Image 1: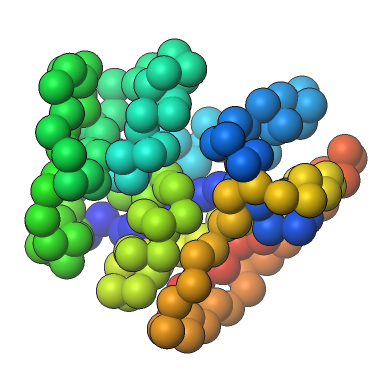
Image 2: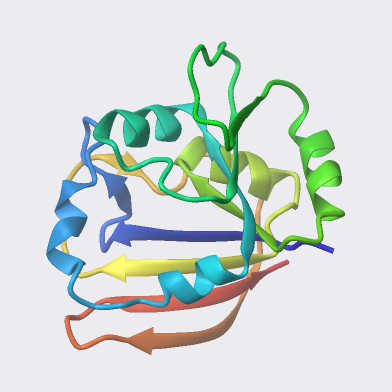
Length: 172
């Protein structure tokens, strides 16, 4: 049974991108390995919101993987690479479909609306947050408002030499 995981970086003040959606501020932290490649070794499917997909696709960052990619969207995707498919409809049904997968975990890659939607239906099992030692002051927040309270239990933390802190949680 596939688990649903979030793995994302945020500034110390809680932003995942600048106001225009840029993640260029993360480039300064590229010198170290934070466990992403090991994480991806266990992922079979990547799920993301349409805004995240469009932003990464325009920048040429996505898709660069052989992993199955599902974009949760309400708009038609006219052109998409072979490993990218769209999902229009009930996220709960998508979760049910993917739970039975045997090719690895499902990475809910973002953005904030997608992560919140999966958290709100109780789909995310594990949450890895990389807290980057930078204050952006403004931007797109990691979490958007919700009426649902989500409890997290800390599994562990790791501090890197450049000040990045990785927090790993079990959700629920």
